[in-house]
Image (cartoon, rainbow, N blue to C red):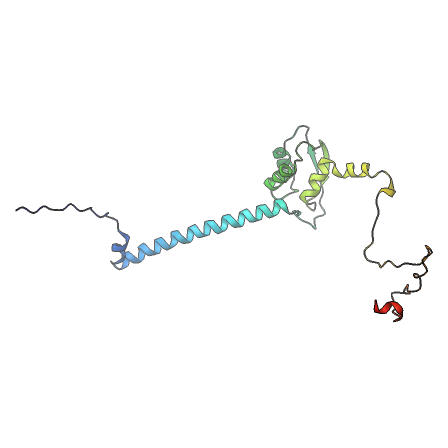
Length: 191
């Protein structure tokens, strides 16, 4: 009887574990493998960091240099797109990142509201202030105010007391003078 030889699969020529058993070759193999892993982790962390900063700038509102006293005249031509406007303002040195400005304009839908003209801008202006300026938002608010009696201003820093001038007999007696509080412990003290 003849014995048949079983065919076995050939092992791949590059087997990292066999190389690892060889001493210095194994050390180099593991060192390279570790470097690749660290590089992948670094790329992921850096990508998340850049993404977070961009998102923070888009949804936050900050100025390039809040203490700057410089001023620049920027001309926005007629029929400019958000991309072109962002490029113009960036080239004037007013903003840090033209892509943040472009994203803010596109997300807010300001592209069609931009009014052409010359505008005085400063690196101390926030992205939102620049967009409001070139869209004429502040001008529209001034026109809409109309009558001064339409709005009520509330000062939350002071206390309001009943002076009893409306004919209410219970008021007016407990109004404190010069920030004092009065509590006479009378009939109302237990309620």
